[in-house]
Length: 243
Image (cartoon, rainbow, N blue to C red; front, side, top):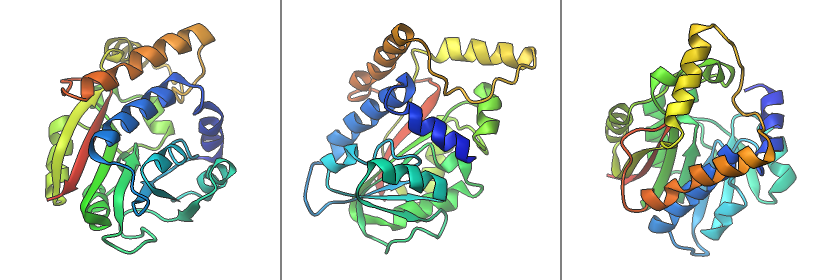
């Protein structure tokens, strides 16, 4: 991504409803599978501007990695741990079988060979390690937002699950999420497509009241996802281990 996008994300991630809601959902699911241990090693693979790095300290010692020097620059403004330059596939700057937890949040849709990237993530997990992956869902939602953020694709649940299994990963949980807001997002993007409106990135700050409502509506799904899977949504989340 361009540097201005990392700056935009850095400015928004602690107040925008999407980032706050996603953080709550991801952390809630991680707690089901990973407990704190001081020997745990955790990698945020594609840490961006640092949204999750400090929160992941809840589970152990945290390391960051990103392919962008701009992203690392912003991460280091808020995180005092190690953040290295690296990318997938085959250029994760750590030894294999090293991490008890890896997260790759909205990362693999940027990678041409996503299956090889998933294999790379698997190889860097310990034998009982956990990996959390999120991706954008449904090509029917493809918009200029995807183009600006240099996405290669959006996924269906079946497609993502197949690629996870092909990479030698065991799927503990997979579900769509951001389902409550799916319909309005779908309608808005279809209108933009029909009218050829190029709206750029969707990461724009709404007014305080709307932001509060959207944050609580979106993050409420963490309670559903603890026990159930959701059959549709704007995004997908998967919890996987080595097969």
